Length: 118
Image (cartoon, rainbow, N blue to C red):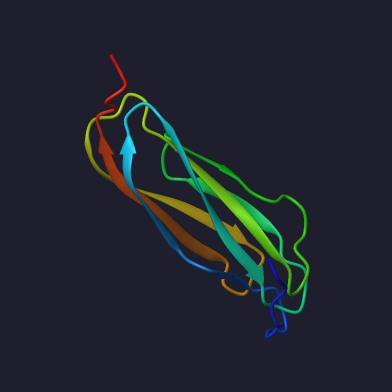
């Protein structure tokens, strides 16, 4: 991951993408994706909280400061355990000290039967 140019007078968060489509997800599995973001502001960025919309999604996020120009990653892991086949879409709320204080991320996919499961 490369540093990006600083453009604001305060911390500002910019994600490479706000959504991720897993495509087909086997039932009773864990599936993860990374949301890469940068601090494009002029001061240190701090994530205050990263909140998944339900218990089927877990997140890992940086708890320290992200310096101007630096990249960082939020990893979202979706558990399809106990779910039924069909489409899903889940949200993740990101709160920070950035000029844009709130950002919503989303993950989606289609759950399908696991052919290896008895």
